[in-house]
Image (cartoon, rainbow, N blue to C red; front, side):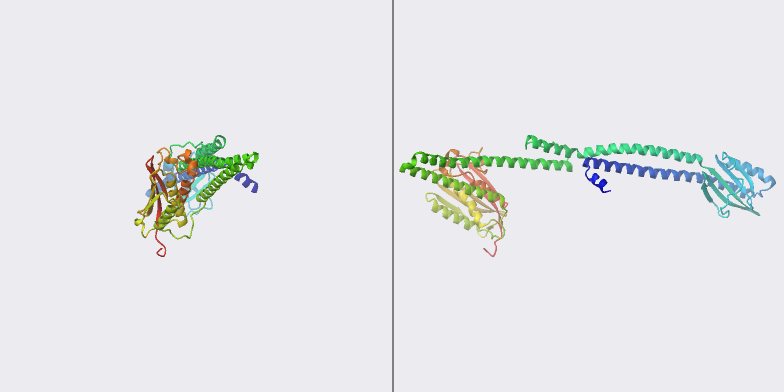
Length: 474
């Protein structure tokens, strides 16, 4: 038994569906035929009994109306009447009180059907039935004046038995045919049900062999299987996009890391060959190497910050930040670091409003946005920060009058390592990670960030964050 169960569990799901559906169809067919067989059998028996009952009533009414004494001259008309009402394959007998046969007729019943009355039947009970040896018998007591007797009607049911046997054989043959057809129908049903899953399986094999661009073909029937395949395709779109972004990230990171390493390597090789004996060359090479080392260190720190922003969950148990106070603090610090720039802030609309972001991360977001505005400003060295409330969100905008961003470049500005002016990247000292870090931090707290820019006309970065109630009046 355990071996059979183990073998069943290891069958492919296609064969399990085929067997179960075939079994279900076969059981339903057998149950239907069984009900039909029982119904037909009972209907035919009831029909035979009804015919015998009608004959019995006709005989009893005839005897009672004519008040026969069942002697002498009465027997001839009685026999004539009984022969007239007697049916095919049926016999009628009349017994006296001692059980002797007074009248006996038969129509195709066959000889030897009985010259003596059936024993074991109570002659006092009207409508007594007995069915044996393909004979359907009915007895009824007959009392007319001083005559006490019994009428017996016997119907031969051999034709009925042969019909039922033939019907059984037909049902058996149909059952065997139904078994074959249910197996075929079960196989087709399992094949149709598993066809979408097989399509998904083939797509997965193609993805392994050809690449992530393969997708499951969708049918026109918008059912649960269609939803599953659509979700699979959407998931593969995200996987492919993530894979391409990761590939681009590795390529960009490799490119960014290769430059300072190559510069440091070149200066060290020069010093090793001949420059260490020349104080001027030695000083120049050390300065350049230290500068590139600081660039290398800054890049690594930004990569770590980006990794934490993407992987770390939102912080818990932090008080809501005061956006107005944070904006003014960052503006004051930026004015000290960049004295040649003019920094303005409008935060009156944020009075009494808190934002659902930790203060240190809101500072990091603002620092990135203001630092970008400073880097890409030209003659008009002005940065304007505005804070407003839009419904249940705090809106912070950082605007500058710098070089701007071409419309074709806007969709990629928030990507990692992407810089609009690559030729001036060395002068500006950026690595193209700041806005990517800001985007991850904003999205971590269910916010949104948007950039509007006009080439040579300045840039405005808009950050929307959830407004929350202040805690303890802070």
